[in-house]
Image (cartoon, rainbow, N blue to C red; front, side):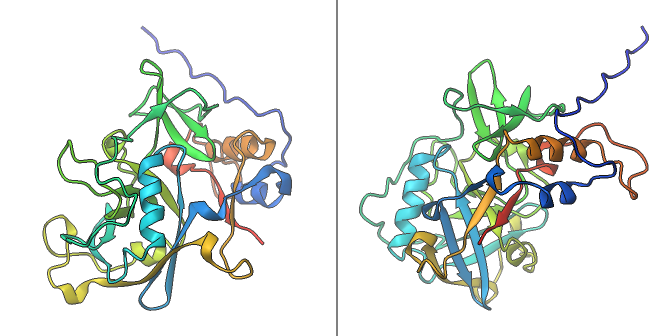
Length: 291
């Protein structure tokens, strides 16, 4: 049987100049197409060496874990903690490790397995390209998501800069005291296996550039190699004129549709032929700092 030709790409019903790039489309986007990220969903981690990492938490996908993480941040749980594991092309992990430090009041020691959430309440904008891990992937509430239509569930996709909760073997779910950020190719096999609680929106280079651990799974052999955490706080507790601010491009906006189309079909000077598709983790929702 002769294989049929693939259907032509769907061009969004919004005009953009010939030769437009993803960067030029974002630059020409309208201010009202961007959605402000609440300050109480931004966690600020200051590492030794004046290195700041800002994480957007995802309470819509892992509410109990996120409540735990916010409580830990507000009560100084991570004072004296460190980055102690850097696994090449995988994750950088931090926390207190093997600690018997008491948990703050209200922290749930064994949260539910928040690896996926009901699809109801999410209006998913499809990526429109095949995915090896899910029948359909796309975007919802500013996040890249994978959808299980049979179970009517959605999960945050593990992409570069995703932040997840370290845990022991199931049924342990991790309470949020040990976290990791993805610093390599998106490990999508972790979708629906570990609680994905957010993403690094600024400062991922401070984690991805750290020396790799030499022990199994990338753990540092000597504690002297650990990278100390100086402070962890929620942006909402920082003075308004000093707190970091970020926003994401609304997946339902015209600029997002144009941006995604161009990501799939580059026709500018460098790209000699369009790919006709894109991987979800190579087209994660645009996020930028805002005034």
